[in-house]
Image 1 (cartoon, rainbow, N blue to C red):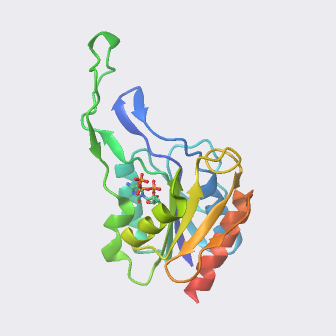
Image 2 (image 1 turned 90 degrees about the vertical axis):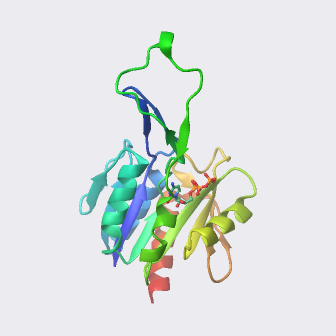
Length: 210
Ligand code: CTP
């Protein structure tokens, strides 16, 4: 299969030295890319700014902003059989990007933000027979919020991720997730390495493809 994976955060610049971002380290998405590669798939990894080494043998497209990630995903989606959106895409960006560093003495008291387009939502009409998997980062009402995203983004599965835990989720090597498929029972996985979560995810995609 050709598998397109996104990973890491995006950065939305305020001025040349400051940006809005989030705590994503990219570890989960990189683990998915590695697992897919190890299981013999062709992988394109669209990566936000992270300090991880991409494995040899896959194509990496490096992006910074959500708009760049959207362009890269849109360029790759037609050629993929499955898309795994593990990236933590910024939901807002500054309405105005300043060309020069804002000085303290003249900094605005508030920052005007505008919403960033939802990448997955924008792909609905191009899904066809492709398998789309999303991740839901939640701090409350985990399963309900994740299910709402599964439905609104027209996904085959969402991986519900409780990011309020300190032993799993953001930045660490382990994760405790629930696989929620569009059809069938939710599967709560015990705490395990992101590599193990990733392998199970790739196997799920392979089974779904059959
Ligand atoms: N996502 C996306 N485009 C965005 C934001 C998110 O494609 N602009 C994708 C993420 O990659 C993930 C899924 O949508 O696979 C859910 O992302 P998440 O951040 O959990 O949810 P949001 O839709 O951004 O909603 P909220 O921030 O309100 O929880």
